[in-house]
Length: 234
Image (tube, rainbow, N blue to C red; front, side, top):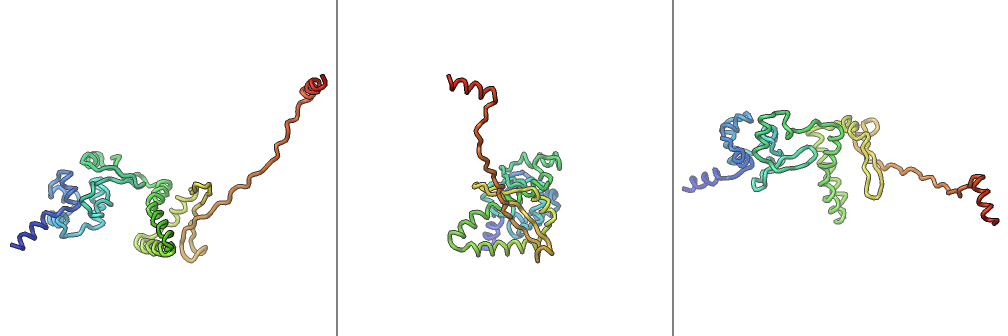
């Protein structure tokens, strides 16, 4: 009896994939065909016996339009959403899925072309979460430890995905960061032999010296001077 009860609990477990399939009204077979997986694999993913992997999540996101971040967060209590490369989110719906299926690559919900400007803006957007963390660490006197953890994380990401500094230079060449107090910064990416390893710098740009010129009194024209002189003598 305990074995049957545990199986019942397992089969009723909600996952992001089961929530998504219910929202779209797809059968297990239809979802399996959509992402090129077997029916037993889909059942295992939905029950939680099999963990949803990154590549499978990417395939599901591409075919349905739902956010890969929502899928991999594995929290079915959160409402599903879509998200673009700039981090803009909007509620996910069956209409988005149907539009993607009809229009394919021409759908407005597909990811836009990654231009240098979009790449740089997306990078800044996705790093905004670091600001409150760093601010909190600084208040606690642990800013150096927070930076160390961040650099170690970036090193691990670099080993996994690589680092294209050429593209980074092109994307940041004309980009500037202006702070509320008017300070302006430029981005610089260096490759060996300029540094021991490729790295990124944020350089403060000197403010242009403001020329202070004395305001000279206006000189009246000869005619005006004559009239002025006449009015003064009268």
